[in-house]
View 1 (cartoon, rainbow, N blue to C red):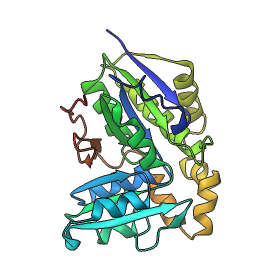
View 2 (tube, rainbow, N blue to C red):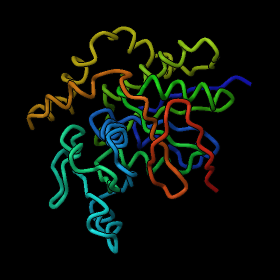
View 3 (cartoon, rainbow, N blue to C red):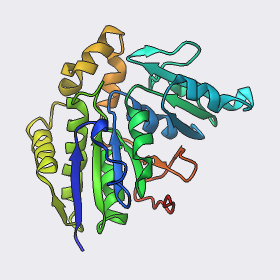
View 4 (cartoon, helix red, strand yellow):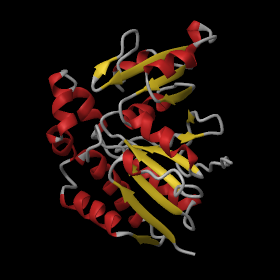
Length: 254
């Protein structure tokens, strides 16, 4: 049985009933899923995606204060008492700790997708490893690549990230996939702009906002394609943990 691949343009397009039994890969390239990938790669114990700051604070209750860090933003502004979800600066604060992460789009998309059979977090950083994981474990499944988008709108950088994973996926000689029109267009968009990852990210609406916050260094970092083999996946606790290239996720939600 041939696997099928589809792309959704916004987190708002997720139908929680239709994703049952499906494989979901979530993209929020600027910056949530890039921060998740880098955070687990750099030694975070786990990352708990929450819907908003209030839920993050509730999640932190009764935990040893030295066992976790609160990380979050809303509409680009760091939440009071939280660390900025900045993949480079966080490296110093997350070793062996639980990261409770709240973002405007990415963590909301992951939570909304949590009814799927398996959920992975993807970015440009780990796109090649995600593609190999899909080829190793999910060639008979329906895979939905979800672009988180921004404030209910399409995000170019997420679409580019989905296209990159699709290009890696179709480069795997051992795999054969049926692609919807949306998936074909995402791949062609990536191939047309393949050498310009930094330009795509810098010119996007969110990229321009991050530049106003002097976060160019983070943009250049997350524009690096395929440099990490960490493949975050959502476990039975609705927590993101570290898997490697080709990792198998044994958890299936009820």
